[in-house]
Length: 533
Image 1: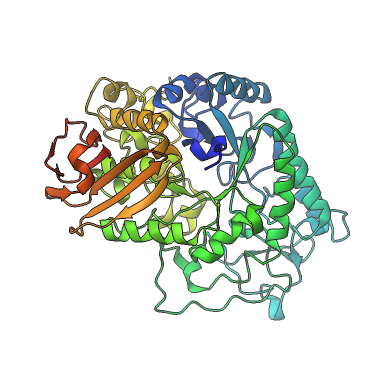
Image 2 (image 1 turned 30 degrees about the vertical axis):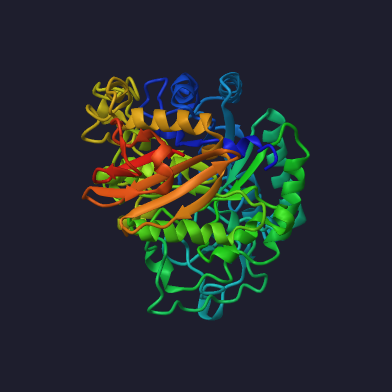
């Protein structure tokens, strides 16, 4: 293959800035805290960080309601703090990817304040306004992803405005050329500042049906490959997102991104589970996103057969030349260790870091952090649908065994979210000192991935096994080949491979020494092994 671009061989690490490191003792993480912690990420073996929004915001959705796309919220620091973070990351060889929220703004953004001021304001058409239906009903039946109608009545101008999420997040009208140009200027602002790419929030939602037609009801027997979304599941969302002309927008954006050197990356949050539709966001001739995020494993049943099926289906769906990626955790989903079970964390680590494509880690997953029950949730989604609240996966990073886990100088009661109960035993300091810890495994896996071209750039070939509890595959680049054997069961399994006779086991998820007997390797329950062929 041709020489890969940096984002193809990189491992990306997501940072939720409120929760990573607090530098000033107010109980909330900030940009100087991230800068202070970059050495840890470099030692871990991370190549790039994706930082969730830190822009000026009323924090109705904790930064995903943006009031100024080109400034830093004082909660997180200053623009000078961001510039220092960027420079420090680049000195360590770490790229910086920022989160852009193009579908909606805050209702406190100056654009919306103007738009809302009168029906004849020059920015009225920057958002999606419509008259009421019969008897004052909403303009159509669209639902908010956070529950309830997707329309909010504005008594001042006597019209409804569209909000895909909470009413504090009005949707921009991407059919207005002035909006398109204004948002392109936002991308240019950060590119000129030196960022290495963008993660685009809800990228598939920016273009809706221009006729605003009702969504049809969802079939009662429809099976979901993702999580249950409450009231939102009652419809098929075919008109309120992903209108075909969305691809014109991303082709135009890609042209802007590609005009910058060195190469930058465009990653889209695309929650679509029909693989053909999802793969369409790579674009014709791969001219849109470099990677639409692949979420197919987030809620996969944790069995070897189902995980292999989803990997193989994904590989088959990729357009020629497209580069895959995998995600097992993020700020919207329950913690990996809770979803799959603590017993699965080591196999999950090896799976994520040995599959073909670019992996994204979520902060704290390398420690096995678990979902924290939150009694009084702050998440705006939880206000409407408590069982879907996301606070439990956003708790502070656990750096050491002190009362506030080394996250902050503040008292634990002052932290913006409570700590995990087990933080005194599950933290960076403790696991750094343990040669068999999960953190040690991540460090070993990341170092091995970087040193072996077969793992960071090689081909993927599934290998059949007589056991339904094993997922086995090979990675190969040139003359280098590696076989990955993952045991998803709670019993030991022996796996025989004709290539093992002269092979070398290089890493086990248990970090024990593994021996090959004849042409077979014996795996402990929930163990994975990498064998160099």
